Length: 622
Ligand code: ADP
Ligand code: MG
Image 1 (cartoon, rainbow, N blue to C red):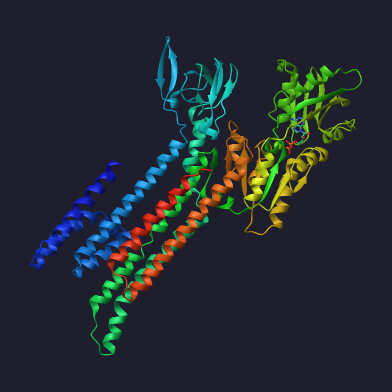
Image 2 (spheres, rainbow, N blue to C red):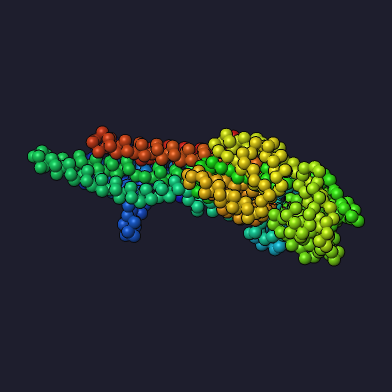
């Protein structure tokens, strides 16, 4: 509990004891009685009265402080001292509880995302010195000992170790790193001492980016939250007017028909409605639920950039997936090399690997892997990557093109069609055909279960888009149980395919695109929700997507949907529950069946129950 919260608690206890004491001590003199009761009332309520006063001065008078001030001052004027003070007392208890719950889920989220490094070690004259990671310049060598977090992104300059990425991905598969490997901040070093040459500043490192993203996610409001804000704006003044009418009209009516007016009774009923109708349960519990949902998701390595996306995800009916790197591992193995003319198979691979030297495409990575030797970058110049086609570059003075049939056709070459199925990488040297490399990709082990999971989560259609050939695409689609497959697409074609789907569906159903963030950023931003996976270490993916899966497990898509649905369920429960209790009490209050004590329950009790329900969103344990 914070200092501020403790202070409120002391005020609550003091005020409660005083009210009880004065209630049971018979004081005959009415003025002394008033003064006595004003003490606990002001102890507990002075800040609310002050806020209400400031609200009136600033023209923003209709808030819950105003409702509370009006109701309690009214009660005290009518001599209902205990009730007036009790309303303030319970209101403060509710507020205290709420601030405690918010603080607690905040703390939970940062504990769940326990990735913020406190320091970086720098070696000076053989001794380690702890410095603020913010002060470490790019290119500095930092030392990370076993048990410590990697504070800044960089490359291992010496040492071998295993890293635990579970704080980032929610998955605890240790990763081995050796000299020369890239490491990402936020991982925990498990075994050996690592010396890391930083490649970024702290503010640009993965940890900072992720923490920024999680912390700013509450800025993007969901429809439900916006609804409540607008609702409260009209609701509170309406309630005040209603209360005024209730206080004035029935007595006047009584006078007109020649009955005693009974002002006291009706004014108390009016004040009771004010207490009942305070909207705080809704105003607080809904953002808190989203906050919890986003926090629970991040603990599973799913970063959601705003409550609006979490809400939209729960309405997803169409999921469009990229193939390579999303449903398949994107780790290709070379299955056949076929060179023609004077070219040897080894030379073909060597040229292809060099052309691909600068690319980060999965195909490129596997060609370099297959080549296995050190690349001589001085041999390569004029590199041009043509999205969805391949790469052209000059190697050893020759113009080499490496890519698919489309690229070859552009050069006026008709390549050989390989006999086996696989992704074909054709190579041309100085505009004449030199052969092909056949590579094949493996389907991710849980891709099939992932698609089944989506169907179970209520997705109508799963659509696979790929730049690969139809033959390869069909094999994958059949194995996975994808509903629709579109192949031979350029990145721009993927955008138009998604646009077609967006036009065809009805506006209530949302379309989610899942990609790996490599050359599919336009589609990620065009879809209702863009999910990038395998984002660990890919800045581009983190920027372009609305939801980021830290690792590349497709099953996380269904997990994210489950979390979003649970969160939205909680939000709806809270709205219905709070409004139902309030309206029921309002109705009964107006005709005198609900006294001030019930009104207090309707306000504070409902808030506490709603907040407790909201904190369930944080616990995502399945
Ligand atoms: P996907 O939709 O499967 O992610 P891409 O749009 O990334 O595919 O690429 C589509 C096709 O373009 C690949 O199947 C490949 O034939 C060719 N291609 C793309 N990039 C490269 C590259 N770096 N080297 C060779 N071929 C490439
Ligand atoms: Mg791709």
